[in-house]
Image 1: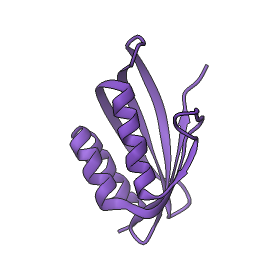
Image 2: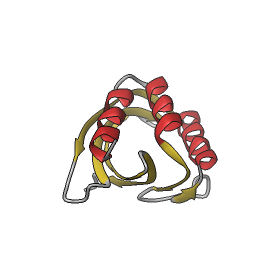
Image 3: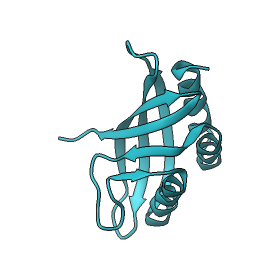
Length: 125
C-alpha cells in the first residue's frame, strides 16, 4: 500500500466522522509519528512526536472545540511516491468563541504503510 491508498483510506474514514478519524489514526499512524501544526500555543505546542502525543492533541482539540462537521477532499498526489495532501474543511465553535469555518491542508509522509509525519498548513488572509 502506497501513499495514494493510505490517502484514500484517510479521506474515506475522516468523512465518516470522529470515529472514522480515530480508526484511521489507530490503524495508519506510526508509533513515532511527528505532527507539526502551522502554529502552536502554551496549551498545545506546534511540534509533537509519538502516537500518545497525537492522541493527546486530538483529545485537546475536541475538548476545546465543538465540531459541527468535517469534510476531507483528496488525496492529492505529487511527484513523491511517499507523500500526499488532503484538504479539510471544518465547521466549528471554539470554547467561548463564535462558530466559524476553517480550511486547512495536511501534508502526509508515508513509510511502510504508516504515516510518519503530518504537517498542517492553514488558509490565511
